[in-house]
Structure formats: structure tokens, C-alpha cells
Length: 156
Ligand code: MG
Image (tube, rainbow, N blue to C red; front, side, top):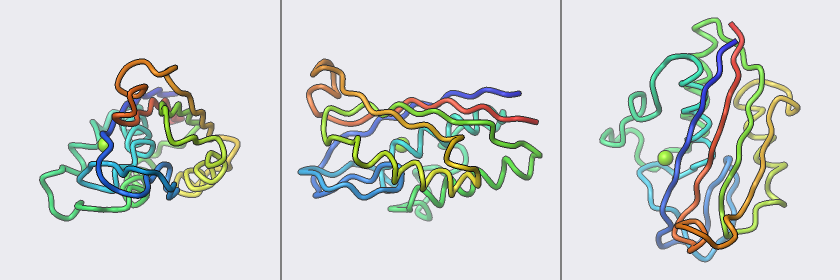
């Protein structure tokens, strides 16, 4: 078995929605990012790449590369998953904690779980998602941005 950890954070900017776990969530602000700014999927990609010993998302999809401007992060996740399967690795389970003061995410977790399970090509029971606030402490608490922690277990 191989374990990996991922973390990502993105700053809020102008906009009317955020994309988290491939789900479009209406909000009074957007996310500043080169891609669609999906911190959930970016942290997950890093956990998967970490478990596989394949570096990190920035090495595979550099933000200096115009091909990735505004890209749907589900496409990045699917490319990462393809590399895992090429390396004869299978996904045991993944667990993610989204840290956001706002927007409220509980209602959106089932749709995120379904998206991620589909992209990982696993049953939803292998994908767990949680959302928490920071009780108004720190950059998340000041509503400056959103962060996500992810862990992934791969099986050789
Ligand atoms: Mg990112």
C-alpha cells in the first residue's frame, strides 16, 4: 500500500461562483486561479501523485502553460488517474477535508463525491468528503480563500 497527502489553498477574487469537486456553487465571490481554481481536486491530485511517487500537480500541469488556462480540473484529475493506472496502481480510498468559512458546502458534498468517484473510476464508498469552517480564525475565517487537505491510499 502507498499513502499520499495533498494540500491546496486558493484566494477569493471577483466572480459569482466557485468550483469545488467539479460542482459549480453560487457565491458572492469567485476564485483567483490559472485553472478553474478547484482546490478540492488540486489537493486530491497532489495526494494521488504523492502516493504514486510522481511529484506534484505543478510539475505535471505548470501554470505557465497556456494549455491549462481556465481548464476544468476534472480533466487534470482524469489525467492523473490515467497515470496511476499506467503504473499498475489502484485506488484504495481517498479522504478530503475542505476548509471554508463560506459558502456553506454540506448540501454540495454528495455531488462532489459522485464526480470524484466517476473520475477515479471507483465506487463512491471509496471517496469521503468533509467540510469544516475554522470558527472564523485565520485566512479561511476572514473569508480570504478556501483550502483543502486530502489523503489517498493506493494499492500496488
Ligand atoms: Mg491549486
